[in-house]
Image (cartoon, rainbow, N blue to C red; front, side, top):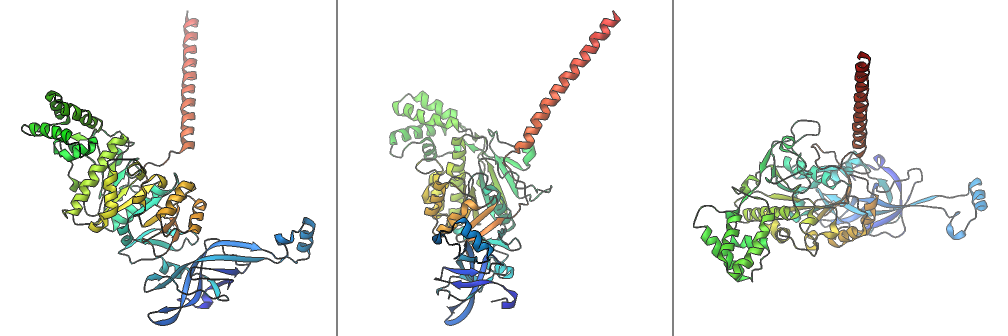
Length: 530
């Protein structure tokens, strides 16, 4: 151990059956370790061909207090219990159950191969030991918070773990978007290129400090010309327009967006002929294609027209196509504000951006890793439903890591997400979750989420999370740190808004009473004057 035995606080002794993954210990009643406390016990392991003593770190996840004198099997009545208590014959025993997290060797966490022996002393793990256990080198560590039971122990995750994608899962109001904001702050400091697809304007203020002033000038918010989002440009700051020039769309993209199957060759050919005619002149718009198909009059063109008219609902076509390189910049966050848009429009913009990003990364016209944050992911990759963006997201989940394209999937309804994508997210940050369907989806998607960790999910407070997977050395329960930036899209303060409503009514009523009093005085003065 890095600490001497005298420096460590003894809590008890290992008892009963123990395995390499868990053990029981009887605890000192005066010490009474709480649930989720960290403990350490000595064990012998084979390391590099030598048998050495190592400190095994474990976490208490079950505490039982029992008494042989007041055992339920004895069925004591109230009077008998009172006599035993008054005679001080009640024995109390604290039995704790701990899950093994591992031991560190050269900065790496290893799992023990041998069972821990009964009779071994169990100590309270020192903060120094835990800091070492949950730390990473500065160039790869992202500081996300502190141990729930040890607020003096910072917790970092490794950016290397994003290579296998990440999911942030929680029920509404548990703090998932807040946690994602912390990750965005940390990634920006590391030089990351990030694109955020933001249906509720949760991240549009990521450039603003909570304490006032600018957090970073390396943040751009993109909005469409038709956007009726929650916040205006004057509130957000650095805002640019995202639009697509209709004449830049290929025939394959038009067919995909319109829902035209590849096998419908006659319809596709009819659109192709119309486009070829339009390309003979100046730039053309959607209305020009619709007009051309109507004038042709042939059956296949009229059939194609029914599908092409669907594009009128997607109000994102403008004079120029926004270059994807405006969104892809080193050490930069691009937030695509989708708030206020119809689902079809948001889905198309997501489809278009992700396709362009995937192609830019695949052909290496952009040479840095890209992190894609997809908020409200169940809207874009729903289970058993089709969306335009679903296929490209699934392709990125399956192949993106080879090119340096990494997903961060964020949702409050994991059971509504396509399981193929969720299962590709080998790391998960899971906040409070009580819905059994969502818990079951997490169970199916994560090999590292044990049953006892699943049982802990309903007991988490707002802002507390369990982190599992390749972003962390071992499963960790963390209190997410305070954000440096302003959170957008947060719930309204109901109490203060109600107070404002009451004040508005009172002010109006007072104004009416004041006006009536003035009118009475005026009438009285007129009468007296007469």
